[in-house]
Each structure stands twice: as structure tokens, then as C-alpha cells.
Length: 628
Image (cartoon, rainbow, N blue to C red):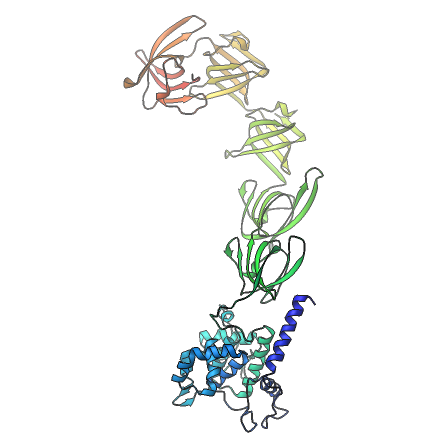
């Protein structure tokens, strides 16, 4: 037996001896035969001094118990010491005298009042027309529940179902007291021979002896004798401890927590409904404590927790789902890597919070959709999973290649689906690639290709690509001569487009074969592209009439007018033109971002997309490719 349990057991024995010492022996009553059904109970309460006989040595087992007698008997059962009794009598002396409570009964009634077993209004009804009022069964049930310190527990019961045939005759408030006395074994749940409770029936002294005997045993076992009166401030010596809950043992009314301190020593403490328990500064039930919580607590010398303040456990895990239990309690087991260098793994199982947030492959999902083998990132708060972000072990995705990245010798594919959602996955070292149904390599893929990819454990294993051909036109803005040359144009909508020039691309200039070095800024081109790679390009040295490139000579804001010097460096000619703009004209840079009209300065190079007639040019878009 542990030191804590031994200490508690010794305390119980001590209390039994102390309070059974009120009367050194059980009285032998002339009117209680050895075969009387309640003799055992009568002897016990007589020895404990709870019910006394008369001066002639009789117990009067069939005499009815009065309300006054019941209050005194229950006061004796609570075992209040002389100090508490004197304090109670002093507090209620005037009231007791005013209501004609006999001197011999004043101590007991005062204790019953101070312990809130009876109310002052009930005491006023102890005598009716000068005669002692007899206690009904429902009265004794109510008094006894309060005397045993069970009133709060009784009131917490929201639904009470009594099986008595006359249950409807019991008041709604009193049903809780009756239910509590049934739970503690003081009242028979089956009732009398007819299955009735009979709430208004009278209680005889032998029946009262049994009820007091069972109630007294409960109070001794739960250390409730001589307890403080309600509202009393009791100085309890406590000490502060810190540690981690390593294990929990739950009983019907208490939780035993074993804690481990910083040096690994373990101790066990009792937490119950009287303990002030908080988790992350929020009050919780003591039954909600879990293993693994770090805490600080104030505890008494007899290992009871007065207050406990714990820190919540917030954890995240990333790994593979090993099992999912759908039935209550719902559970998920995840396998995760504990050491990247050695690839060591571990498994943990967690219960799932009722408000868990679940996504699968980027979409909201239900727990039943999560399968063994799926990749998952989980968030765990206080041993409960609150979020699951999962990806199917096997996933097929269709979309358009937006980018192909190379990082640390690994390729990553960025794909945009039909809903314009972007996904990025690494490619397996041995990824299978087909482009237009022909075997290909990763380097053959192009931005803009339509692809269907197979993904396993978050890695691309197969790629089926389809070349997307595109035809377009626009004016050349810039050319990058590099190992993989690029050309940037402005199309008729004023949008910037950049393409690679494919190896072996066909290039013509004014109907003649040419090289990329022959193409100049300002040329108008028509092109055919596969994805982001131009395969054929046809250029004109003269730009279309509706696209102009030049430098600002003057700005007249008042008349929404810009004077531009248009130039042709190859023909060594220039021409001054006046451009008008309206509130519908778009001002932007080459990145498509809007710029303010006021940001334009004399000397700026601009590109104008405009409508032209014989008298003036009206700008649709004005693009600022470079800024000083």
C-alpha cells in the first residue's frame, strides 16, 4: 500500500475510533429483541451516540421521528466538535429562543442550521400548535442528503428517472434528493411491497436508525465528519508543486494523477470536484485532465489538489496515415519520421476532436474519406486531433504547366487546374514522361503544356503531356540573346507576353529567311508557339498603324494630349505625332500593373496602342516599358 493510501486509511480508522467513542458500548434496549430486523443498525447508531433511548431503557423502534429529533440526530451524525457547535449556537441563539426550541435541543438545531441541513423557515415549522411536527419520509431524504454533503451533487443531476409507481407524487426538487439517496444505498429503489415510495409517510425510529447508519458509514469513508460549515474560511496548509502528468486513474468521484517532476521522481495526488482546475487559463472539469500536461498545482498535506493550472499540448505531425477508426471514439494513427538522417520512424495514435477540420487534396472532406497510406499533416491540441490536411496516396491531377523548377538536383512541377488552383509537386527520380504520346524527358516539357500527372505519396511518378499550339501577333518590346533566347512582345490588348525561341524555329523577316539577330524592337510579328516556345516567327520591319513606339516631347494635361516623337532607327527617320487620351485609356507598365498618368515625364519612352484616323490618334493603352 502506498504512503498516501496508508495515510488515508489510518485517518479513517482514527475517525471511526474517535466518533464511536461517544458511547463506549451499544445500549441494550428492553424493547428491541435479538431478532428485530433493525437490531444491527440500532446497535451501531446507539454506540455512535446518534440516537439515544429513553430513561426507562427503551428505544421505541415504532415511534415516529419528529422534525426536531431528525435535526438533532443528523447534527450528531455530522460529528461537529465542541468549538463548531458553540460557534453555531452563538450565531443562532436569539432565533432558537424566539422559536421556543428547548434548551436540550438547541445545540443540535444550531448545528443543523449552520450546516444548512435545515432552513430557518423549516425550523419555524418544528412545532405546530405547540406540538412537535412529525417528519415525513421526503423531509428525512432532503435533510439527510444535505447532512451528507451531497446537495450540490444532487442538484447537478439534470434528468432523474424514478421507478416508483407513485413517483409523480414526489416534488420535482425532491426527486433529486430521493435519487441521490438511492445511489448511496440509503433508499430501496424498488420501494415498498406495492412498489411505492410514499413521500408523505412517517418515518419510524428503527427505519431512521438504518438510514443514519448507512449515511454515517459514507461520511466516515469520505472524511466528511466534523467538516467546515458552508461559507467558513478554512486555512489549509498547501505547497506548490510542478511537473508533468505521467498517468491518470479515474474513479466515479475522483481522479488520481501521477506526476513526474524535473528529476524524475513520481507522486500521486487526488483531484475532484472541489479542485480548481484550469487549462490555458480556461476553467475545465477535473475529469478532462489528460496525460502529458505540464502544470503547477497547490496540494495539501494529504495529497489533495486545491488548484491546478496546466499548459495545453500543441503538437503537429507530418507523415503517413497507418489506420483510421471511424467508430466512437474516432482515432487516427500516423507514422512520422523522427530522424531524417537515419530515416527512423515512430507511430502515435490520437483521438479526433468532434469539430475537426479535414481537407483532402485541397478540398473539404469527411473522416471516412481518409485512407490508410494517405499523406497527412495533423494538428494535435491536448491529445485530440483538431486539423487533418491530407493528400491521397494515389492522386491524378490534370492541368496546365505554369512552371518547371530545379532545386537541389530535383525537379518540381507547378500546375494550374481548371479552377485556377496552383499545385507544386516534386518529380520522382525515375519519373515516366510522355509528350504527345511519345517518350520524352523532363527537359522536353514546356510551360503551357496540358498535362495529366500521377502522384504517389506526394511525388510525381508519371506525366502525360500534350503540346498546346498557339498563334498570335504583337510588337517586339525586347529580345534576350542567350543560350535559350527569349522575345517579349506587346499584343493588341496591351498585354506583355514572353516566349522562348525554340531550337530550329523558323524565322522570316519581310518574307525572307532571317536569324533572331535580324529582329529589332518595334517590329511587328506573327508567331506560332507550342506552350511557351515559339516554333515559327514572321516579322515586318514596319509596325502596324495602331501600335506606336516613341519618346514623349510634351504633355498637355489640360487637353489630355501627349506629343510623341516616333522613330524608325533603321530608316533613320522620325515623325512627331499628337496622341490624345481619355478616361478610358489604360496606363500600365510592362508587368501589367497600372501606373498613374502623372508619373509620365518628358523624355520617357512609351508604347501606344491606339485608334488612328486622318486627324488624330486616340490612345487605348499607354505602356511605359522603361523608367528613368
